[in-house]
Image 1 (spheres, rainbow, N blue to C red):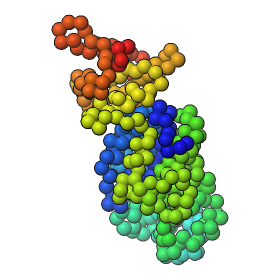
Image 2 (spheres, rainbow, N blue to C red; image 1 turned 180 degrees about the vertical axis):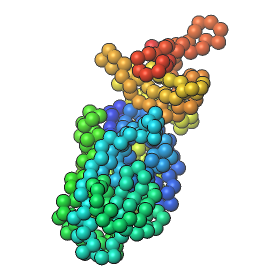
Image 3 (cartoon, helix red, strand yellow; image 1 turned 180 degrees about the horizontal axis):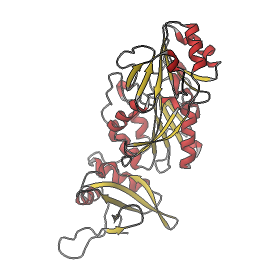
Image 4 (cartoon, helix red, strand yellow; image 1 turned 90 degrees about the vertical axis):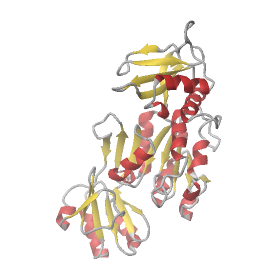
Length: 373
């Protein structure tokens, strides 16, 4: 898949977080959320793929405006479905575990002073000793060594000076080893990585392999970059990562992900509001005529706003309109007009938009046909 990807073609867009969407100060570069909203409005599937634990993933997903969709965390050990209607805002779809005892014993033989952390999904970590703030996502508690090895684990972190030189020796114990620098290793089950988890999601979504794109900057992204139909390395990535990618973009401090995301959507008038821009993007990328469907929450503001397209004689969901959540139906009308999208209106009085009732997809909603349908 070339950099000039046709915007109307559905793409699975796999995005690393740290060094790709978030800088070393945990700041999201300006324009990133707006760019992600447009990519989603074009009908593409944005999937976060990170080495972070679940507790590290969830806050950044919220900051990025990704309350719905798929995500991969813990280097592929965990697949989750982000869903604002779920009790905790997400559902854990798949957990991939391994027996940590043999590799922990080998790590202690190689580096007796190694610090060990075993992930507890949805909470934090059990550790052999205190890790510094920022080293681990979530809470941590110090436990006995036997407790670290007692149960199957999704991910184990090992920290010790120069421990990367034991990568092969530890990998011989039937685990996947992902170096995160010379003094840190992440361990997951054999064959578990971002690419394997992403391919399961791709298959479930019915997206062809050549309609995939991945952007990353770390050694733990190598499998993901090799898997993707189009691979992009951030400009600050190590040489081994840059050489593995089809394309190199600017580094994180120059918001290098933005032109990559922009290549997936058609150009829209820069004077449009975010809502108008998303409506225009959805209409231009849809495979057929479009209606805007909305559903209310408990009040007058909208809880969902989506573009649906007529394809082969039936209506199919094309894309979310992220900025349509939390606004009113009148705001949708105004934005559609601003984007040059006419819709049926009454013949008398104020000529209000003619919304139609929608049933059969959850709570009752309304739809606004575009282009006079």
